[in-house]
Each structure stands twice: as C-alpha cells, then as structure tokens.
Amino acid sequence: MTTPSEQLLPGTQRALLHRIATAQSEGRAPSLVAAVQRQEQTVWSGSRSCVDDHAPDADTQFRIGSITKTFTAVLVLRLRDEGLLDLDDPLEKHLPGTGVGGVTVHQLLGHSAGLGAESPAPWWERTPGALRPELADVLGERTRTHAPGRRHHYSNPGYTLLGALVEKVRGAGWADVLRHEILEPLGMHRTSHQPHAPHEGGWAVHPWADVMLPEPTEDLGLMAAAGQLWSTTGDLLRFAAFLAEGDDRVLCAASVEQMREPSAPIESGDWDSHYGLGLQLVRRDGRTLFGHTGSLPGFLAALWFSVEDDVTAVVLTNTTSGPMIGDVAADLVKIVAEAEPRIPDPWCPLPEADAELLALTGPWYWGTRANVLRLTSDGGMEFQPLRGKGRGARFTARPDGTWVGLNGYYAGETLRVVRNGDGSVNHLDLGSFVFTREPYDPAAAIPGGVDEGGWRGLGA
Image 1 (cartoon, rainbow, N blue to C red):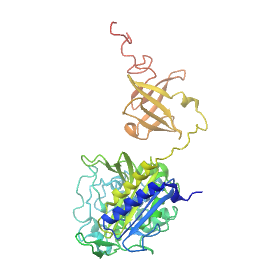
Image 2 (image 1 turned 90 degrees about the horizontal axis):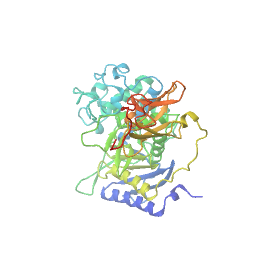
Image 3 (image 1 turned 135 degrees about the horizontal axis):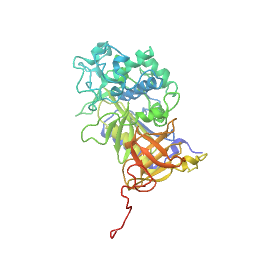
C-alpha cells in the first residue's frame, strides 16, 4: 500500500518543492504553503517559511480574499436550483432599494453588471467594515462604470450585493448560510468567517529592504461576501473537488459545470482569460484552468484545477505582494500533468444498447460537409465535424423526444429526428439545418438533391 504522498514520483515531488521554494525566496514571502490533489486525494504538499521549524501545513489558516466569491456564487446558484430566483431576474425583484436594481443576478455573478470595481474611499480592505454599514455606503454615488451586459468589469461591490441577496432570500446572515449550506456538508471545518488557530498573520514586505510590517486584520462587514474567508490548503482541495464534480448535497454536477462556462464578454485581445459564474477561467500551456485567485492586505491565495488532467493546486502565502501566486499554482498543475499524465479509466461498454439511438450514429451530411454522431457514456449524444474544427456540440435528451445542445455552437439549440410516414429516419433538423445520410440526399427536405441531373463528372 502506498500513502498519498508516495503516489507522485520523486522527481515530480522535487520539481514541485523547487517551484514553491523559488516562489517563496524570490517573492520574499514570510511563509508559503501549497498542495496538489488528484483523484480527490492530496498527492503532495509542501511549505517554506522564514522561521525555522515553523512552516505552515495543510491545517494552517490563511485569508483567501476573492476566492470567497466562488462560495458566494455557489449560494446564489443554490437559490436558483431551488426555484427561489432566476439568473435573469433583475436584482430589484429580490433586493429592492439598491439603486442598481435593473442589473441581473447573472450579470452580478459574471462581473458584467457595469458596477465599479471598488467601494468609495477609504480603502475597504484595510479599514473596518463598520465604516460601510449600508449598501449605499458600499456602492457610493457613481454606481455604474459601464452599461450592464456590455463587458466584463470586475466588481467587489457586485458580490457584496450578491451576499445581501442571499441574506434577503434566506432570512439569515451570509456567514451562517455559508456554514450550513457549503462548509458543513463538504466537511470544510477549517474554513471560517473569522480566523481560528492555527493561522498565519499577514505581513507587508518592504519593496527595497528585507524588513516587514504587520498588516491589520479587519472585519469586512458587508463586503464579507467578496473576500472575508479564512481557509487552509486541505479545505480548499475539498472545495475544488466539489467544483469539478458537483455534490448533490450542495450543488449538482450540471450547475457547477455552468459555473465553469464563460458568462460575460471578454476584454479585447484577452482571449485566454474568461469569467464564469464565480469562477475564473484561464488558458495556460494548452490547458484550461478553473478556479480563483485572491488577495487581501497581508495575504495572497490561488486555487486552480484542470478537469481534463484531474489535477488541482492550491497556494497560500502571508504577504501583501511578492510571489505571483496565480502563476505558481498554474505551474504546479503543469508539473504534475506533464510529468505524470492522467491514466485514463478503462473503457467499458454501455450497460445496455438503445436500438433507436444506435441507428442514429455514424455520418451525417450538411450539404457535402461530413459530420459524425456518437453516443456518449452518460446517455447523451455528441455531434462533431468529421475532420478539422467546426460547429459541434454535446446533446442531452428532452422528455418530448428532442435533444438540446449543451455547449459549442449549438448550445441551447434543438435537434429533432424527422421521420418518414413509415417511421424511418428522413433527416436530422438542428436549428433549421438539415443533416442527411447522403450528401444532398434527394429524398430529404431542403436542400435535397438540388439538381435533377444528380452528381456528374467533368465530361458530363
């Protein structure tokens, strides 16, 4: 039997240690702790500290800053899944009197509501939340920076509004709802609204000298839903496993998958960075990473996971600036994914064959363009171009016998199987596009055979 830490090869473990040691040294961080997860097990952890024999471990709390937003987003999606709100609802419907009630819940989750990035001065991260007792104090007089829905513009006050929305609908405080609905079901007993020992203190390191200054630890008040939480590498790995697979006690797999889909227009030229619903999405080294970064005075945090590689990395440190924490976490994922690629699950046949669905598999043509329909292991279908890139999607069945696209070009579009009078299949209708078994099949609907003379050679 091997322990989780022995599941990675010695060379991989050394590469991981070297990466965080370099980050702590070059970033001049008082302490830094990191952990990597695969198959929902911690397969490596490591830490560095400027104090001998006092390195943090998987149970040491750090402030995680904006990773808190992902927790708030999960709470909002729970309300949606329970039918208590719709993501397209205007905020005013559930939380009246804010002055920005026309923005939608979806826009707030994806930072496209056009709200300002920060609350009015003084700096909310370094002052008591008691200075902002009302939502009007968080939003200020200039509430909108951009027109809603036009662009992604990160907004801390936007997530304050979402925290207030949770409180309004649930009739309880944000921290209590969070503990009851997420932390307790997932066993995240070391994640909390306030710090609990053992925890690190936050420090600012002088930019031009090796000296430090302690950072204050403020209660953020109404801004808590945007960045209040304390957590550990152990708890954040549990949270990442949930974000990758879902957990019906908290949020189903389909809803966490929705969190990982781009939700807002991206900045011009920034094609490798998106924002979902409470999750950041980035393309690094040819792979897609999901998660979030966070910062508050004295602390930096990063959580990234690759669904395809089944690798998660968490990095926490107690300095206001220094290590490029998001890059460090991304590099940890890369090291494991490339040194020890994921071993695929054994292929297994479906438990049973559906003859009607099986008859739909194989090539279909839009005009002369070949596409292939395949059945998927989850009971759905996949429709993709036979060669190269192009329009395609995964589909799931509807009760009325049609199929709906889940992603790609045909996301939300309806696929219908159109049959002849004798029940045989004539063609597929996908958002009005006709797909036939033969190129320009004359027996099918438009475009049909097009020319009565049929196919011909050059000398015809």
